Length: 500
Image 1: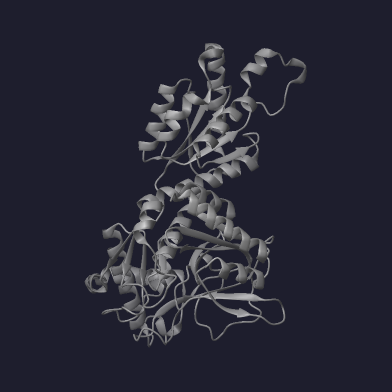
Image 2: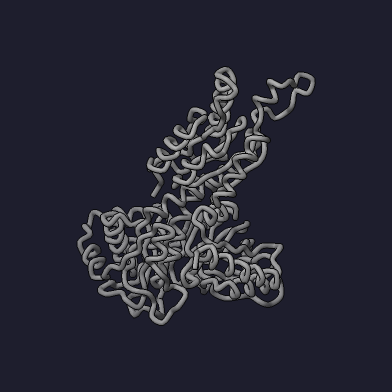
């Protein structure tokens, strides 16, 4: 599920005080910067130059257009000269798109021996952006501020991170999540306020009967099933019993039929994320395994046991990470290694990890599953490769949402896992397992997570800022008592910021 295009608008502030010649040069400089950002490999979306804004009416009109244009992901603002910020009040208070304030200057180096007052009047970003930043703070605007020369790769990378978050935010605003069956009974962390989530994020979550899914599966044509089977045979290493003429070929055919029907349900309903639960399988002959894995690889969000928050977050993160190397998957902290060689987490699930994180060609296998009470399900088996990653979750804190993220390092298992017939990843959390797990538990983190080797922390920070959602980070600098205090401070802040 690739994303249709979008753009961010590059808006430059000035005023008529300096005359038409200066404004022409301001426009030329702004256009050059916008074109450079648009051409940057670090920025995955189009950057569109707009004429400089010099009066309140134009500012209000353009920011209103940005708010109403569905292709506009957000706006980047830069004050080339001094732009009295009261002119911006009407437009900024009406803006409904993410905002980035770029504090830059057209020239990287000062021409020391040639500087005169004309040069000083033209190049007033140090002056004008401070005026603009004051108003942003006075208005209480959530925005990202990036400082540095516009041609520097580090500056462009930070802008690119924000554009990924803006793209994820747009996806959240229109995301529809289908829940096939309800939440796993008596589980707390996968519950939550769906109305509150829709108010804050835009995500729409609705439940659907498993019978409708079963009907779509039964209605799948043999041609559709054969097409899916051909993909299995081409893309994966099929276990001998699943190959044509094998003793369990019927299990693979049933898995392909489930995938074909599930895809129809999701496409016809406009859903980009979904959940299921092994406690409500209706007429399903086997728990969806390979079907869910392949749908995730195509960009769908998924949450097991009715976990709609993880399903939504997975879809959003996949949209944010589109085009980056490395994969993103549903994940669960399953068991620990606490012995010699360093403490580690073995992450897995019953069936459903995304093959986008596979370090090798996945093996397609069928094995018994002692849960769900159905036929043995087909699944893809693989191990995630070594490298840095992030695990993150979204939890309901009673009236608000909290994002929790932990930087981790994926490692090779200490030994082969010949008797573990599921996809898996092994990692060491930063700063270490004991501190990371203690902080995660203090923050109320879930056992289901989004695991990504494609996306770092900065886009998640940007998304949290755009959405007005708390984000707490566990990294190499985390200390348990400091983290506990951060949670206390955040609780007070978000309670007061929400109003009494």
